[in-house]
Length: 422
Image (cartoon, rainbow, N blue to C red; front, side):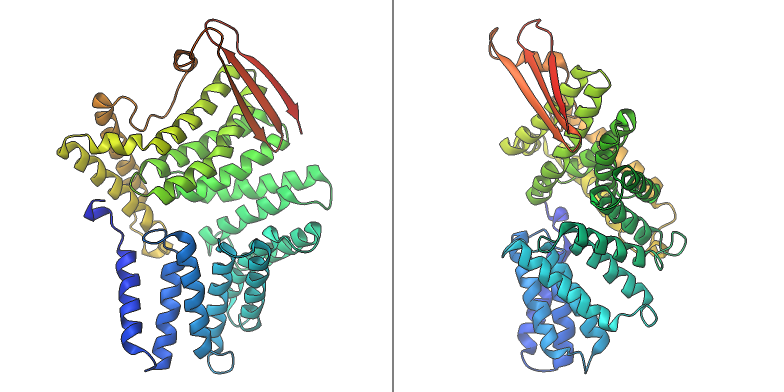
């Protein structure tokens, strides 16, 4: 990997570990603080060791900090560490999923003993939001009751997270609220869907592809699922296409980060299915098949390492120009994660220009490598790769609204479709 693409986060983790080894048992308060910082760095890192390993190390760091940061002696720091420990257990890959979520809920509830609405309103709201996420995913207990608790936690967070005071936290919580209402079991299904769509719409006002493609992709994923359940095909198509636009950006700039690309492949799979299902319901099965094949082709190119191989096969100047453009986009997107008051006023324009520059570099590469980061396919492309006159391509799109089946025979045979509504 080029040196400019190596994140500074790895250096920070290594530096914290070095200092902790030197301190050993000296200066316990400083050790606890550094353990907390190390846990945060590990919990948010997707580079270096595997994500699962990093989360295990983060949990160990938080637990080490809690041995010093006790509730009686350091109540505020204890609550912060409990909150962060809950985050790590909520994301944990190893262990038993149900048990991890129980530990996350316990940690958040412990944090709320100190993080009260009156004393620490912002921190209280964040812990309420994350507690809602844990209840939303909870495996133990009755699902209906868990979802009601999630809704209560999100509504509580929104009493602090207003659009004017905390626009991004407000959008984050609206997105989570939409997910909970979409999945809600109690009350009328149509009413829940309307409330989910209202919440997703609010979140989409802040989370756009230009400003935060990862959050925008997730909002559009939930929104398109709810719109499909409501039978609003064109709106579902629009939402899923916007989600796919964000997904393509994230996929293209992560050429040298296999973990990010793997995650993007998995997350975007449902967006492709939503888009195809909506296209078919609108009477366009050819476009439905094309979008499913685009997703399949992207995954196959990733599995075969073709985009990376194409890049390595380019002249040094062209390869360096693309990598520099991709790094520029990554750097600007990192700026969006800073507090709003710390961002440059022209960040949106710079981000848009950087993405345009990246696409221009990709187009230059396609002159030499036509399939490099290719974004679309059509019916002619698909027929061309079928092995013989008796061959046929069968694709499925499984969504919350039903299942779509598409059959394309070789030659000039008509595309056939069938489907089942949920």
